[in-house]
Image 1 (cartoon, rainbow, N blue to C red):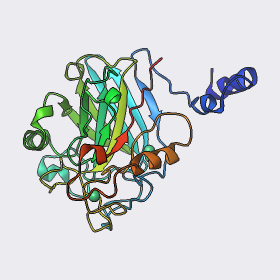
Image 2 (cartoon, rainbow, N blue to C red; image 1 turned 90 degrees about the horizontal axis):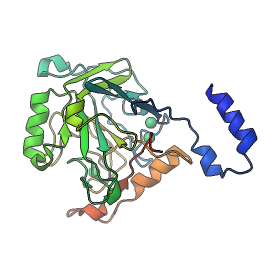
Image 3 (cartoon, rainbow, N blue to C red; image 1 turned 90 degrees about the vertical axis):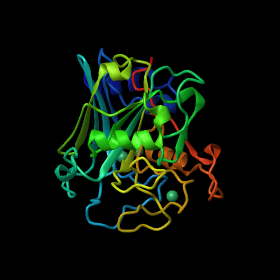
Image 4 (cartoon, helix red, strand yellow; image 1 turned 180 degrees about the vertical axis):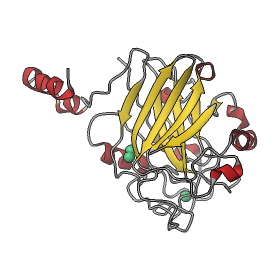
Length: 288
Ligand SMILES: [Ca+2]
Ligand SMILES: [Ca+2]
Ligand SMILES: [Ca+2]
C-alpha cells in the first residue's frame, strides 16, 4: 500500500480519535525485517540552534552539513550507515594525499543506544561536540564517519578519549558518493545486528585536520564565523558544536532542533560543566 493511501485511510477512519501529535508522527518510517530503516531530516536546518553560519572559505559549500536522510542497511555480517546531505560531496583538500577516504569537509558521529536503559552507556558526547545525552538514552556505541584514515582517527581516540576505545567504531570502510557518506561496519563491532529497540543520533560536524587538544577532529563554532570557523555560537565550549542532527518524529522538526540545541548555559565560559551542555535526544525509528 502506498503512503498516500495509508494516510487517507488513517485520516478517514481515525481522524476523530487521533490526537494531532499522533498524526504528525505518522511520517511512515519504514523498518525492514532486519531493523534497517530510512529516517528523514528536513533541509535548511544546518544552523545548529538556528543561528550558526558556515565558515567563509569557499570549500564549505551551502548544504554540505545539511542532513536530509539517515539510513541503516543491515546486510549479512556488515551494516551500512548512510548519511545524505543537501550538497554534492567533494574532496577539495585531496584526501588521497593524507590517506583519507575521498572527501574532505564533513564529519559525522552516529551515536547508538543499544539497550535504552538508565545508567547504561555514556551520557557525555565525544570530545568537541559539546552536548550530552539523557541518562536513559546514553549511547553504547558510536560510529565515526570521517574523511581521515583509520590510523589518524585511532590515534586521536587514543589521545583524547581512550576510556571509550571499546565503544567507538572506526568503520572498516568509509566512502562518499554523490550526496551520501557511507560507513561499512562489522556486525561484530556493534555487538550484534541492529535491533528494533535501538536508538540513534547523528551529529553533523566538519572535519578539522588541526583540531584543538580537546577536540576529536571537530571544527569549532565561535561567536563570529571565520575562514575555517563556524559562527553564531560562542567563543567558549558551552555551545553545541553540532551543525545538524536528528529529532524524534512529531511536531516541527526544525523548531524542535533549534529549541534542543539552544538549551545550554550561556553564562558558562571558562569552566564548562557537563550540566551546562544541551541534551540531545535519541530517535528510535523501529521501536514498537
Ligand atoms: Ca537537515
Ligand atoms: Ca564555541
Ligand atoms: Ca536536523
